[in-house]
Amino acid sequence: MKAFNQPHQLLKKTLVLGLALSLTAGTAVIAKSPLHAAAASATANGAVNASVAASIYKQFEKYVSKPATLAKARAYLINNITRVSKTQATIMTLHLENAQLAHLPAFSEKLYPQNIQKELDKAFRKKGIELDALIGATTDAKTKALLIEARDKGYKLETSEGMYYPVMHYQSFKQFQSHINKDIASYIDLMAVASNKPVAFDGAIVIGWDDLISRTTALETFLKQYPKSNRAKVVKEHFQLLKSRTFYGASNTPVYDSFGPKGETAINPKVRAAYEAAVNKGNGGSVFLSSIQSLLKLLDASNNLQTPEINRFLEKQVE
Image (cartoon, rainbow, N blue to C red; front, top):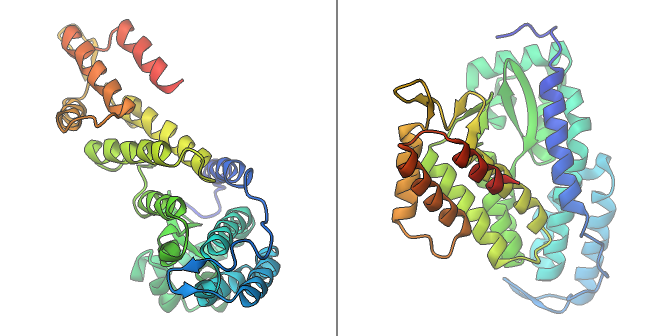
């Protein structure tokens, strides 16, 4: 593990930049709807009382608007989501995500001090990264309080290069899915997959190439099904990123890392196999899979070597 007194500015900047992308895409369309919007509509649990739903919505908005009451807002939504309309529940869920993303950089700073990082490392070595286990393994009162705060605000912990930091815990949003609109329920599924097992870690692709292609296709499908979704812009950014990963890989796991007879760069055979497996299942109208199919034809013609023609093709896919 790297020394805690060495600053991890690069990682911190990367995290903040990632959050900025999510926030820029995630809040642009969200506007607070009228309190009574669709209050009389049915939820998964039946009809709701319009005045009660409006009161709950109003109270939630008060909580979620302030970082100091973010945990209270989340608990309030969990306990009352069945008492509001599906439209209100959807907006409340999106506002909770917005608030969590907005507060994450500030909360992250609380975990960066050297003494907190040391306590987190001790607990991690005993129990792993799961948050409740860390809470149980931590003896330092301040660190335990921060871990409880992270859990209650809807975050989880991850570690990289000896540093511990909070991230969004999208799996916890699944409890809202049966009460909200289908597009946002599907969005939560996509984000939970990405949160539970990130595509890349420390500059390397850490999932299978077939899984990467499957995830990219799922993002494309969402955009086709829900082009006007409030979260379409966020999903499009993830789609563009995963397309780039599919066609280029990452710095430590490039797609073209093999060599031809004269030392030319060639495609990794495992990546090619994943490409072939994906297109053999049929593209189902997927533009992304059709692009892979076209790339395979170019690779056949070049004997799997990375030629200028292939480079031009790849550039068009990610522009």
